[in-house]
Length: 306
Length: 213
Image (cartoon, rainbow over all chains, first blue to last red):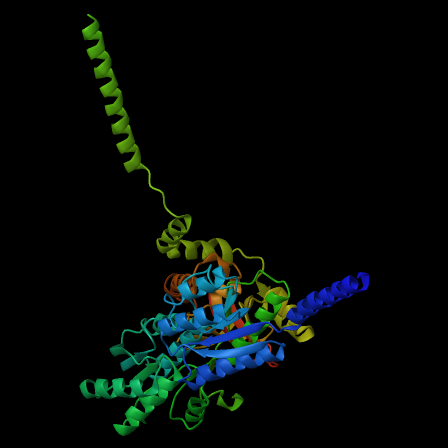
């Protein structure tokens, strides 16, 4: 009888400790929630974040929000109920994404924003963001010099609900608006999308065939603008400026078909976000709310470096 | 008699109730409870960026003891780049470059499109850009404004715009009126150095002050 009891006790102890040691050996799970996978730049951001999380020893899965805050909300609900331990987020909307981040925060899951800022400084654990404003100040200066301080131009904005759109536009206009002979004849959203930007510029060109420059809020739209101008036979006359540092635009700068872009560093943002999640798991709880990542101007003068 | 006393007491009671109701209504309408975060946000929205930038410029940048002689900075960077960047530079967040607030002296040898070419007494030729005073160079080189002082990047950048407006529209135009090619000047301002940088030629300075010597 005593042996039976002892055996039972030993089995119970093995079972309990066995279970707990299995729990401990389970890798924490990191969710990478990205605004869209329909743009190579964001694909690179998401894949790089997941890759860095895996390198640090975590399970990682990418969720696509398809530029839709409602889908992002569904993603958050799914990953909270699936027991994810941290979220590396590229938000869809600077206001609309706040409630999703707060849901995760309530569930005790840290959220590290990448690239896009949300309009709250107490929701995300930290936000690692491109210094869009400074990057577009540099582009604005280049724009004024290239157009010799005069002419008509078009601005193609990104998504209107995204803070990056306005940070870029704000940096650009903080310079260009000080030169009264530069006149903006149209400002429209191209939703950061190549085809949309092409269609938008085609329509604008019908009413304003004599423009001298186009400033686009990202490189996908700069490529769309180039296509529209090429179709209209104006690609050598109209100076195009983008933002991102996408490889196709860097090539166009090399070929002198696009004037300049702002080189962002998505891999640095993704790596920093994954690193912060790792530090969080290891006990760090205080992070800087906003971490700007430098943007470098790429133009004909320094293209050999890229 | 007893009836009269009772009526008086009743009237007093009604008066007290009436007074209480009036005080309660007045009290309710004169006190508002708001979330502290809402009040803080409202304060930031009404924030006087011009006055703040004035104070940063006149009380901070012009009186700063952190401004380093350009020749000393170059020498420090050549000796120990990391230590020099840490001690004299300011980099917000992640990047290869940092802003520094420097001072030096030299002779104006050319003026073209707002760029003053200076034969610096100790550092060769440097350029002062009096036209494109934009961006965060002055704010960040000063090291006087923290990212956490403001709720959003947009507000933080507005400090730069106000500071640049003061220097570009008020300070520099007055100062450059007094100088011409051939004059010796003292100057201070912001420069950006990269950690990839090996040569210290063609340095571009965003001025905070230009003085005829």
